[in-house]
Length: 137
Image (cartoon, rainbow, N blue to C red; front, side, top):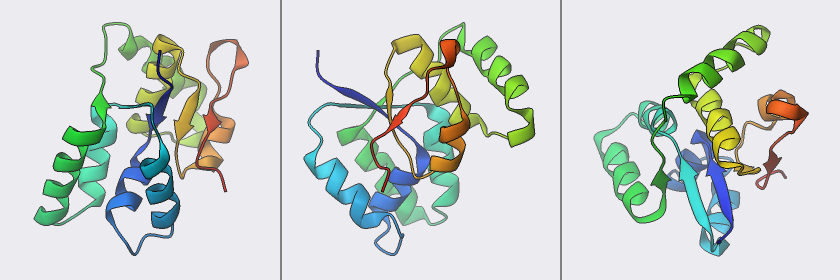
């Protein structure tokens, strides 16, 4: 089975925006990665929201079709996400982050690509397991 990594919003936005502080790191990672890139629709939605222009929206959708596998949420993900909302209420987590945690639990993928190292350093999956951030500086 090829290596798999979960992809958060930040690296998608950074890859497509040259002025982003994480652009070079995102480009370096995506150009060298040879495994599967998994994400969720809440992540794609957040990336589109943060990329305010029509041109950026098109770039996200084109890049997504060539590079990312958007994994649909399953019937148990809503309860996983609710559990994470309750657990991390003091962190004010967003749906995109929690959808990735639910996907990690469901698939067993333990690696993530995120610029949101602070929040993902706090988040824990069932059994206390944390995700390994491959984009950490």
